[in-house]
Image 1 (cartoon, rainbow, N blue to C red):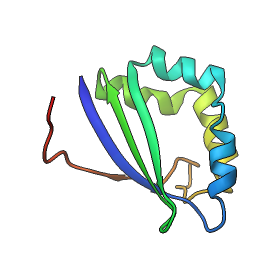
Image 2: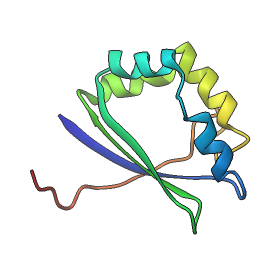
Image 3: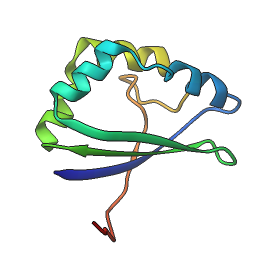
Image 4: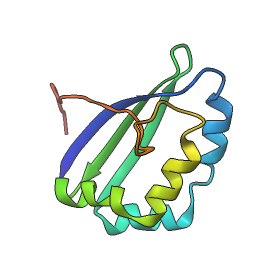
Length: 104
């Protein structure tokens, strides 16, 4: 299993709406994530900085990358553009984090 961690950023005053849109997350998006080998996916919010810390365990980088090409992911990204920093393709701007320590 590959552990991934990354940071995203919300636009100001969007914390509540971001949380609302994730509760519950779309069933078809959840299904796509699982079908593409994603496990233990969590997103944490630093309320003081609007930064989001995401952690996921994935089966492969290729299957993780393929999620971006799914119709449901494209719809999700389009719906989230008003809440967070995004790229031109509506994907969230992310900063990948390197794992320094892990304890099982």
